[in-house]
Length: 266
Image 1: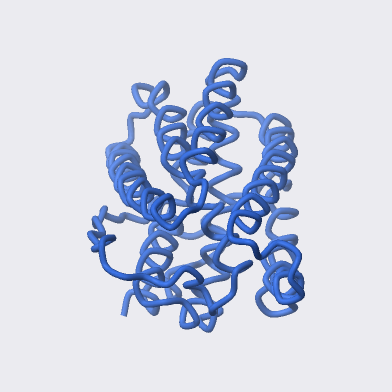
Image 2: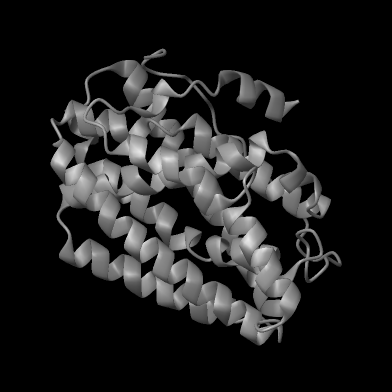
C-alpha cells in the first residue's frame, strides 16, 4: 500500500454561469451532456450526506494527519456543493427540469439518512467515493473525454475529478479506524450500485426527454460509446475496479494516482 495519508488541500473553483454556454457542451452530444448533467444533480445534497456520514466518527480519530484530511475532505465537498448548485441553476435556466430532479434526489438522501444507521451511511459513502474516483480516473486518464467538452465544463469536471481522487481514501480510513466490517461494505456497494444505476438512468432520460433528444439515433449511439466503449466506456472500464472493491484487503490507495494527479493539474 502507498502512503497511508496523502495530504491535499481544498481549492474553490469560481466560474461565471451567466455567460452564454452551449446546451450540448460535451462533444456536441445530447447523451454525453445529459449523462453528466444527471450526475451533477446528485451532488448538492449528496455531498452533504458524505460529510454527515463522517462527522459522527470524527471524535474517535486520534491521528492528527487523518483529522487534517477529514477537515480538507469536508471543505472540498462543501465547495463541490456550492459549484453544483450553480451548475444546476444554469440547467434550469436552459429549460431542463434540474430543480425537479434535484428535489427527487434530496428526498432519496433524506430517506437514506432516516432508514440507514450511521455506520451504513458511512459504508455507502465509501462506495460512492470509490465510484466517483473511478469515474474521475477514467476521465482524467482518457484526456480526449475532457478535451471534447466546452472549456467551461472541462474546468468543472477536471477540478471535481482531481479532488475526488485526492480524498478517495478518507471515508475508508475512517471505516478502518472504527473497525468496520467487510461484509457491511460489500452489501452497501450492492445497494449503492442499484440506486446509482436507477437514478442515473431515470434522470438522464428525463433530461433527454425535456431536450427532445431521447429517441434519436445519435443519442443511442453515443450512449453505447460513453457506457461501453473499450477505451473509455464508463460501465465497461469501471467493472474491474468495482470487483476489486469487494476484496477483504481492498484500500483506495492501492491504486497510485500520484502521476495522474500531477499530470492533470498541469
